Amino acid sequence: MTEAVRNFHPGGWWWALALGALVPYGIAFVLFWFQVPLGMPGRFVYLYSPIVNWRLAAVTGALLLAVLAAFGVWLMCDRVAAVRRVGLGLVAGALAGLGIWSYRAPPDHVNQHVFNMLSPSQDGAFLHEALSVTDLRAYLENFPQRARTPPEQMRGTRVISNPPAATVLLYGLRRWVEAHGPWDWLFRGELDVADPKTAEFRAQATLGLVFCWVATALWLASGPVWYLIGRLYFAPAAATAFAVCCVISPTTLLFTPGKDAAQLLSVSLPLWLWLLSWRRAAWWAGVASGALFCVACTASLAHIWVGLTILAVCVWSAARSTGGLARLVVYTLIPAAVGVIIAAGSLRLLCGLDVMATALAVAGSQGQVTRGAGAMPLAWQLLGIPLFLLLAGPGLWACLLRFMFGGGRTGCSSEPEARFGRYLLICVVVALLATIGFTNVETPRLWMPFLPLLLLGLMLQFPESREESATTPRRLAGLVVAVTVFSALHWSLMDVREAEARLLTDRFFW
Image (cartoon, rainbow, N blue to C red; front, side, top):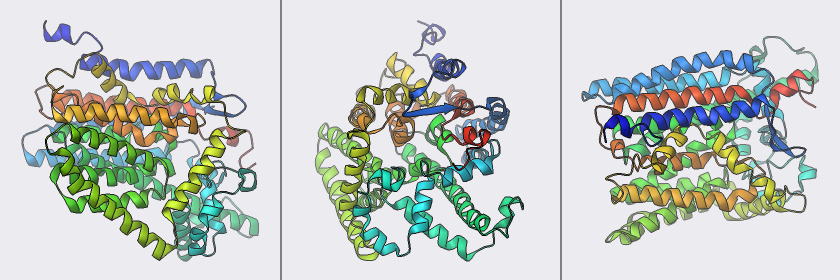
């Protein structure tokens, strides 16, 4: 069978990439055209954008940055080290540009971001919580009790269903903003400074915008870490493309700036150190991994699920190799446990935060919200699975199609890396199925940390990820362009946080 014939099926790379980009977007566009509700009507629905034409005009900027990133990945395949460094710099610049684009692309972006940062149903819940904190240590000491506050009294569920890291960050930013004012230039004199209520609003809006900047920076900072994770397994160009796919997807663009996309950094850092300690027998990395994992668990319970998933994968994989379990225990598991103990003790001593009690309290509150008497029926929550897949992005779909149709498994099914990848896919799917009942259909947002794990597992099945060939540059460049452009196109259809709908109906802060 010739190469051309082999490629003429979904397992061929270009067919997999074309189908992976066009089919999910085509489905999303049809749903948008017929205004099919994405969620449970009357309870929770992701809205479509009422100003799609304006958003589509902004996609041009993402297209130009996609070409720049693709050219950088192409240069990463060169044998000359200086050329590869230039390519890496171009990709880094393109990602930074995409971060700026994501912040400025929404129409009337300042008002949209201010709404999201002040809305109790969005990240604004953490901002209002931070404004109420007068003694940070006392707040953290009492947070387990705070997390058990009924949602009706809290006017929302975001604070009680999340550990307090976002509130702590906003508290620190609030202190910094108050010390470095005035910030009236942010609003171009559109509000009356003499009005005390307006002055209070300006202060809150300023804090929200600064948080947007910091959250965007944290999201982009995860890119280099995903690259380092990729380099543990892949050639430089493939690792770079992997990092781009982890940072850029429909879900990250739709939920940035904000806490959820920023958490990709707190997921990637302990994961990189854990894998580094295991693969390179570096016990110090294991200690650092455990310490950072403990700190990351103060941001979201998703980190615990990611940690359990990776632990299961590594134990399973290590058990299949001679001496693997001993190596895992000595160089990774024991050092990581030491790191967790050190970090948990330090947080308790320095900040008064009991990490274990906090996690248990938040888990209990989240269970009441999502599985209690007034929770969304499980049959509707299962709708979160197709929603997650719809917005997962071309990177995941292209790799999944190629893997499913056998285009990437030949010759590598018995290799340890490929086995590790398959175990990772299995364990991630189990974790997703186990948590689907606690998502209230918000899987595109809540399962965001699992997307890179799925991508890693799939890319480990393809030999060319580790051994570059003559076709590697154009394949990886095509992947980067498709991921960036079609993620932006998905973004153009949606108003997932309802900011546009409220702006256009004069329900901005009501």
